[in-house]
Image 1 (cartoon, helix red, strand yellow):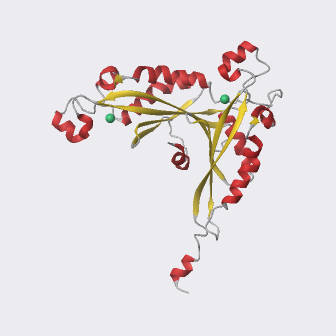
Image 2 (cartoon, rainbow, N blue to C red):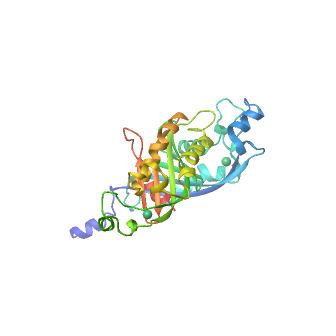
Image 3 (cartoon, helix red, strand yellow):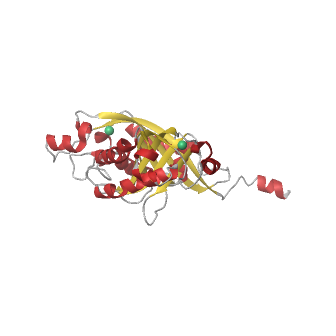
Amino acid sequence: MTETSSKANHHGKGRNCVITRRACFSSSHHYWLPEFSADDNAAHFGACAIAPGHGHNYELIVSMAGELDSDGMVLNLSEVKSSIRSEVTDQLDFRFLNDAWPEFDLTKDEGCLATTEALARIIWNRLKPHLPLVALRLYEHPRLWADYLGNAMDAYVTIRTHFAAAHRLAKDELSQEENEKLYGKCARPNGHGHNYLIDVTVRGSINKRTGMVCDLSALQCLVEDLVVEPFDHTNLNKDIPYFKTCVPTAENIALHIADRLSKPIKAIGANLHKIRLQESPNNAAEVYAETPKLEAIPDMLETVATN
Ligand SMILES: [Zn+2]
Ligand SMILES: [Zn+2]
């Protein structure tokens, strides 16, 4: 047997790889803590407290890692599908989450609200004995998702929003010709615009009762008040004082958004982990805001996440 054919017959056995699998389910839930009055439930949970509940089309992304077997696979995909089906989707699809799993039974002291981050953690706990998980992402909505990496109560929650703004890439200290050489068409004298997408990722500890890393509506208000409202339909160079002296590249806009949000997010009990600013379908900037920088959410989740 030649060396080439011996390697070919090896089928990659022993080499490491990460694989991901996506699964969908539709479930309903109701945010209602029996120890709260009706007014307190409404004040804390807004429309999520309206009886008898509401539903979402959830999308689950499961990342697993391991060595390839002699068949060239980390795991046989039919085993992956069958574990996700039996442990998660068969139990949750078209079900009321508050009743489906005892972890979400709010009549018990240990029950918690079926938030995206709490659900991601419980799904992890139930899948872990069956699959070599490394990361798990759960979308409640294309603009709200949670990542869980198996670290006790620690979870990441991301909200996505957008604004439209004009800008021009040019430094005052350079001539028009020098700016165009540096920034190309982006330096044209009258500017141009983008529909910016912003993903704000916070990290925190899941509260045992509310299932939340922080008050989601408070987080949404901060992003709206400190970023979207001041930036939307503006000329960033002229209307945002910071960009009068700092060139508003996607990188600088992402950094400035992180600067604006970091402390206020701390004040609502979470940590700003990452800002991702997508300027166009072809370019995006990401800023990791925690110091010291924590391990980034694994890239394998990002690859299936955006779009
Ligand atoms: Zn909901
Ligand atoms: Zn631009």
